[in-house]
Length: 117
Image 1 (cartoon, rainbow, N blue to C red):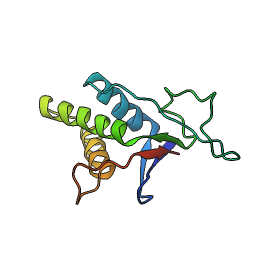
Image 2 (cartoon, rainbow, N blue to C red):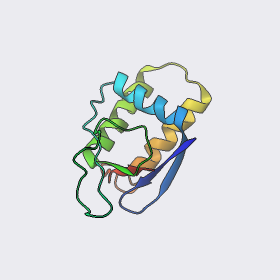
Image 3 (tube, one colour):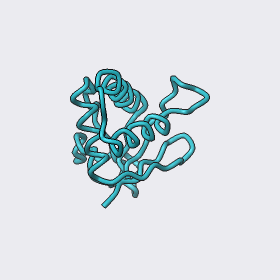
Image 4 (tube, rainbow, N blue to C red):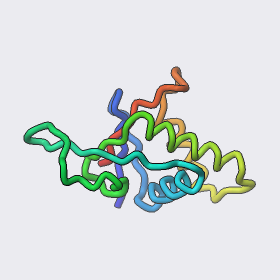
């Protein structure tokens, strides 16, 4: 199984295995990221679902990760990269791909947020 992360601003996708996505989330949390929570819109009413589990970053329901949360994930991953001596090549590639994808290249400080599908 895999997750498709879809950047809000332009729809650019990043496909990750569930295992790698779990690694990214866990690594970010271990390095200071405090999840703000996800949200999910009801397709019929286009309003936020009241019964949504906001701690859910793992399923691929189309839940939304907001700008600040996306930036905080990226910052925690950068902290991890700064302090680790060697990385598993697969995990290293995944972190760098995520960091390159999560913000716009031309606007280093702009993190549009994303959806998890």
